[in-house]
Image (tube, rainbow, N blue to C red; front, side):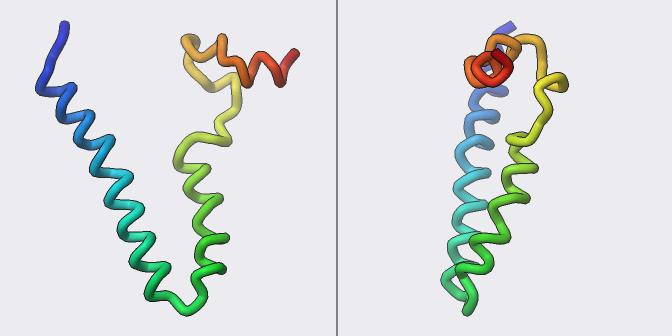
Length: 74
């Protein structure tokens, strides 16, 4: 069933969330004395939280035809 209110709320979260995160990170890096160290330290936790390092057997079935996985597994 199509629910436009939930769709718009989800889209708003998808826009505001990353924008807020990047604004906070940018402000922190501008005010920091060791911005390069913070940049290097922030990347890996964001990859983990974003699911980049998710094992391929834990992914949903509809992602089974993913081209990157297909290329890597042969």
